[in-house]
Length: 253
Image 1 (tube, rainbow, N blue to C red):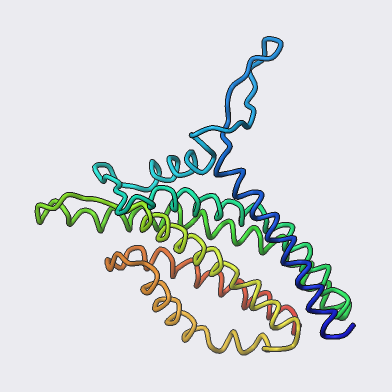
Image 2: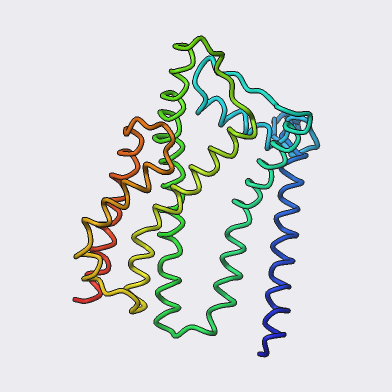
């Protein structure tokens, strides 16, 4: 296959991904659930509705994460629209990931050795589980204490606690996604050792440097400054690093 053929193939994949993401985005932005009674049974059916899936998702996240007494504001006429559109796109990306991963693996598999194919396929399910675990960890254990700590200072100076909708969505999304990707640490360590890029003994010898790096990383992405949420994130990362050391070490045995 020539480089031009490769570009055409990638263009075809990107167009499919874009169409899928656009379809899901429009669906989540425009459709919501409505109850219908059919033969005495109440069922939920997706219909065009102002209370769309993106709006319902925002309400759930707001109720779960925002401290009591904090009010939301929009800073310009387009903020509410762009916020709902952003939520729709983010939901569309989540639902499109399985298809994107499938097409990527199918595209790359002919260029990989059998050993490399088995290594990549074998870590797909653990990667998904770890990524989701990281997202849930951020959602329940990092974001709520961070918001509570920061907004506790508002009444002390007589300020009204407000939260811009755009800032709220951006902050929650970035923390959740970054934490999700950071939980893929043992998978990345295992793959690099499996493919012969970094021997397992290197991970084991540099665990002290890794722990310091985790503290710095956690301090950078947790904006509360209290050290509590930093510890909440750095401790599981250290444990995941230990798991990566164990898995990488088994390859040399």
